[in-house]
Image (cartoon, rainbow, N blue to C red; front, side, top):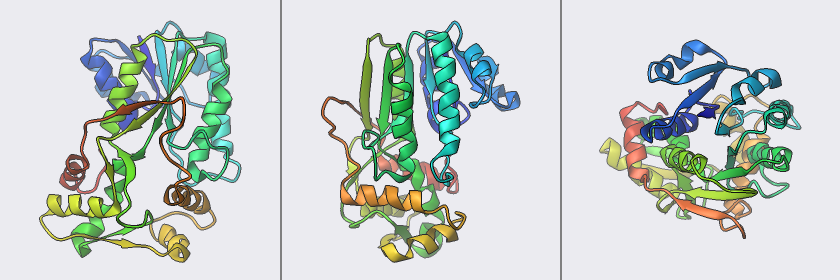
Length: 294
């Protein structure tokens, strides 16, 4: 029995799918049980727990062979990441109380760094807050999600352009599909180990913004070019995408970290898993879904 947070999202859902395909039992941890109907119909147990409720989480972790934990996505955190810290305090209390046989976490490329991470700071806090508990840990340091480029489908279709904060436009970055993260997470959950593992999860290749534009061009059947957004225009650009004023800096700092090479793979001592899902297939799916991530 494996307990899974984030099961209604991409990564948690992919982990659940892979575990079920292996004949394993799963326990879906959800705040709203109505959203877990598809998993209940497939034989999953349902545990209702808010990620900030340590007692409910402890009940959800009881009697499991392993747990998968992730921090709810928050692209506009308050200064100091108080939302993340509250969730991590609840996770720590629940894990310390139940001491499950193992825990696998969604972390991120760059999480070993103590500064200059922007939004990835939440994953650094995850590793620092939970990594000393006396259970086997595995932190999945995933690359940049291919599905993040769902936001590019609209302008690629309407203007033949994508607007990139990653650059130079021909520089290749470590991108990975959420399907590959889910497979890696499910495989690790079924393994036995002691101590703490750090596992880099990458795609089958590295990709540049120009590669992203080309993949969208193939999926849409029209020319698409990548256009670099000047650094001084980022705040305005992020706000135009719906981010609130005053909350854009963590995203900018994260992208600066990728562009400078501060956030990278190849950390000494880390394991490395290379996925098989291509950028072309992910972009084709995003286009077919009208830019939706599911």
